[in-house]
Image 1: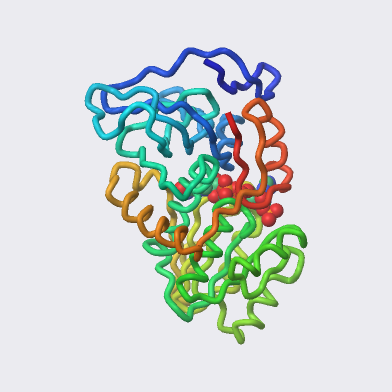
Image 2: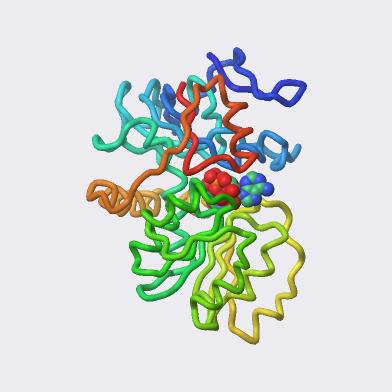
Length: 320
Ligand SMILES: NC(=O)c1ccc[n+]([C@@H]2O[C@H](COP(=O)([O-])OP(=O)(O)OC[C@H]3O[C@@H](n4cnc5c(N)ncnc54)[C@H](OP(=O)(O)O)[C@@H]3O)[C@@H](O)[C@H]2O)c1
């Protein structure tokens, strides 16, 4: 089969590769569309490499047709339209395998590219908003990289929860797209973020911050956080985070909360609860899947360059 591999020079190239091995509890999917995640960039550059264990591959969310099922996988018939999440990835390919419990029927109102674009982003945003930061009606929240894949979902989910949303991005053209998604205030990182946030909240600060950026800006989160405010940290696209003194959390009763999708990988019922909630909002039109860019599978390198240069809005999808 064809698969995107990292060449000796570090480029992404379409090459021949063996079809994936299918275990008894797994389903093989003929990939039609695969979502590009920032984690794929990290995987490409060896961020998760560890000789002692299995390393993830690029491509953790796909949509397509069931092409084979393992001996203990009975829920799907060959040819069914599905979407899937796999923490071991492998979706930048003609075929990907995933454990049966993380494969789901593609709702009729969703296209393959939508299925590949929302599987991880909406699931991540759902848990961050509802079970990690527990956003409540009337609260004010701040979303970093609000114009990204996870960010566009977070912005909408917080607004649906009845929160006032402050959305951050690096570019004016991205900010313009965030108000229709429910952002009350959208600003750039060089716009005195802390000052403006404190003015908007009458010096009280925001109740929750969603940060998938990390990087040097991270400590500023605590300068604009209300008493008992929560910072939900779920990524570091902007690089390493400077050390912080945990004692600084005490005086204002701040909470720093980490989250990874891996935490729910083994609990399919939590996946399903979240997807049911999300499907209902997608059907009613309250929630939208923001796909900003589509590339052919063989253009994966181009797609990564767009993501690394902060040129993306919403989700990037590769079409096999
Ligand atoms: N914990 C989990 O389970 C989980 C699940 C999914 C994703 N994530 C994490 O969530 C974050 C967002 O993922 P995503 O796939 O949705 O990506 P994305 O937000 O669509 O793209 C990354 C965005 O990060 C911002 N950014 C800030 N500094 C950057 C830098 N130095 N280089 C590139 N981009 C930078 C850019 O937005 P602006 O230009 O608008 O600032 C860029 O568009 C990533 O850190 C990812 O690893 C975590």
